[in-house]
Image 1: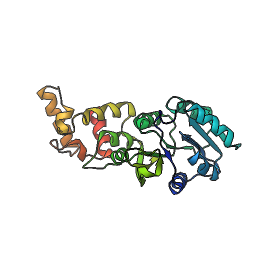
Image 2 (image 1 turned 180 degrees about the horizontal axis):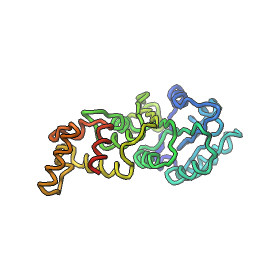
Image 3 (image 1 turned 30 degrees about the vertical axis):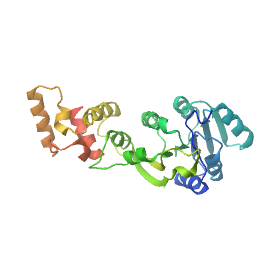
Length: 260
């Protein structure tokens, strides 16, 4: 069952310990682990003695095994799909003022969907530590001149950092590609534009990355509108013939607030 769900179990103890360490777990923290599998990471998190650890496992057999072998008053095991249950689990918990944290060695195929769910949470985790495909982690942490749609989406609400690159050999069964430990620190800076306007804007901005910023933003518009768009870019001191990959997130937010 677990292999059908795309799970590759991380067996390297030093990496598992680093994931738990990266969360800086305090005595008042609530931690949510997604896809605990056999509990390899779970045990390291429990050693940190969080106030509460919630684990969400989709595989019924694994969830049953975890309930038998993990005995801890501060542990709650949920059997189900984290993509559906995460917002509910958060709302049900009486979260402390310092907030909560998310961790997980997740199946590669849910990465994008999970990040979208977290980005849409009214109350986001202060820290998120995920083991994901290395190539995807590198795209998320990209900076100009290699900015991209995924990076712009995640960096809107978090500061991403790759803490460690993980060889496929450290998993069982081994995946076909290497992984990376990605840490996301949720940012508190004031947004120049609301999320519901920002995300549709960046889809347009990065629709055709090989095209210039002006051409992407003015696609389908009459000549007069294209000229106005060019004037707006000039005011923002953005070269209209440059490409969207050259913009950092702060500039993209500024741009979105003018063009939304």
